[in-house]
Amino acid sequence: MKATCWMGKEEVRVENVPDPTILNPRDAIVKITATAICGSDLHLYNGFIPSMEKGDILGHEFMGEVVEVGPAVKNLKRGDRVVVPFPIACGSCFFCRKGLFSTCENSNPNWVLAEKMWGHGVAGVYGYSHLLGGYAGGQAEYARVPFADVGPLKIPDELPDDKVLFLSDIFPTGYMAADMCGIEPGDTVAVWGCGPVGQFAMASAFLLGAERVIGIDRFPERLRMAREKVGADTINYEESDVHETLQDLTGGIGPDRCIDAVGMEAHAPGPIDMYDRAKTALMMETDRPFALRQAIMNCRNGGTVSVAGVYGGFIDKFPMGSLMNRSLTVRTGQAHVQRYMRPLLERIQAGDIDPSFVITHHMKLDQAPEAYRMFRDKQDECIKVVLNPN
Image (cartoon, rainbow, N blue to C red; front, side, top):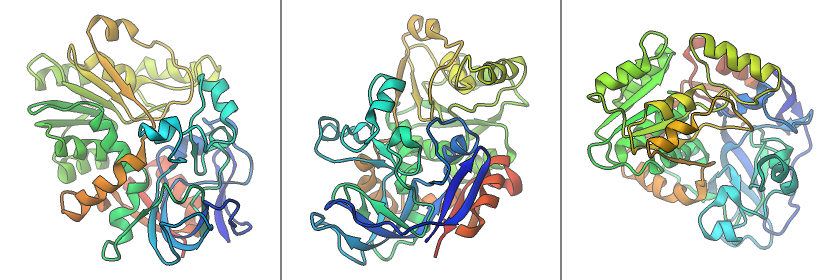
């Protein structure tokens, strides 16, 4: 089969690789009908995530048709259309029983690597380094799905792929970011980053009752999408002082809830950007946390900061004093996708939201190298690419 393979920093290729097979009675094989490049895939592309190996198959946002199931999988059959959640979860461990699926203790065979990095291990993830299990990803023609009796969500035939594909990751991720905020009626929510996760965080904030949502970014096409598709107010941080503008928009109080949907490769205007880039180049910090710093410093006293952006390791100049002295609450986590998939599918079916609004490009799987470059470099106003393998 064909698959998108990581070949080194800033290099991916579509290669012929062996077809996946059933390795465990709880496995399924899915023929991929749609897959996507996620913003967090760019962390792999740009060389920020350790433990990648040449030839690793990328991709953790995918859906398709079940073509084979293991003998222990009773809830799926050949021909079912399914969306596959990006965290791999057993469904029965201590953490899965609490709904903390992205911290499953049984799905990551390289648990000890993550434990050394972060203090405790986390769940396996498709196509996202050997730190997270070394699983083959879904930017391919077929994928093996472990614990298929727990993860995949069956999709009604009347819903097209574009409407449901993002239940695999970015819609639940954005929704969980807003859900962690504890939004109350009348709240103002500020979101750093108007990429796909930021768009869903903004849309979800409205679904959860926010009165006003403010998106912060520097790319005109992203800010335009936030205004026209989501209904948010926007701030271009290269043209306006974010702190002063947020103070003006909130009567000097600050946003009630702030969401970091940027993560480890944040861009910043001015000297702080040079500082972070120099520190990461010298391996004195692993991530560039400018958006997180701003979210903390701008949140109102007693407010909540929700972190959906991906961070890999260690950061510098973390404003702990601001958090403690101003009674802020911080909540974060890789999305527990299995917890949110069915409720969000019901939202789609009810017409509350059509997640396909973030798609700007459809491309063939063979065009993956071009798609990665275009997405990374923000060419042709690219915000979200869907790859079609078949």
